[in-house]
Image (cartoon, rainbow, N blue to C red; front, side):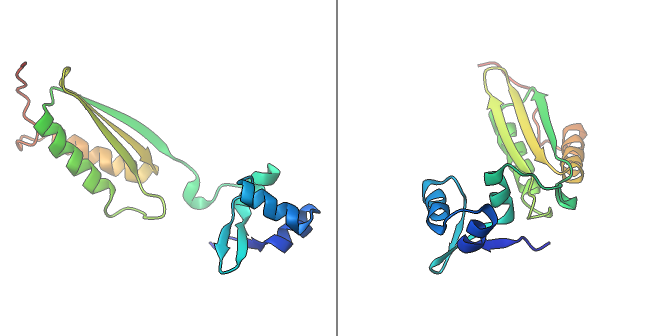
Length: 149
């Protein structure tokens, strides 16, 4: 899908404003624009944001899933290994235009790890299936015997 881009003059004409006013909006950050050479270009969604209009969602942005996975009985080494696995999986073989966003947190005192995943339903489901397989496998990735210090 090609995104519409407008010049400062086109935006001024569309909004009934002076060109200097539009440039002032850009300089102040009120209107987002990209400088190409010596000219600014304004994307249609940025113009819509300024005017308060919304566009219909695109086919790629219809849904997003947020998931929080809590895993108990995880020591620091296992959390590091699991975090590396999850982040590597999230950063490969997915739609690069809409990547999965993943954050991991380990609580050493409680021996607990949380993995937060945001992204497309299919990509999130694939990552959750991977996590399920790793957590239910007897492959030594997670050392379930946690010793209190």
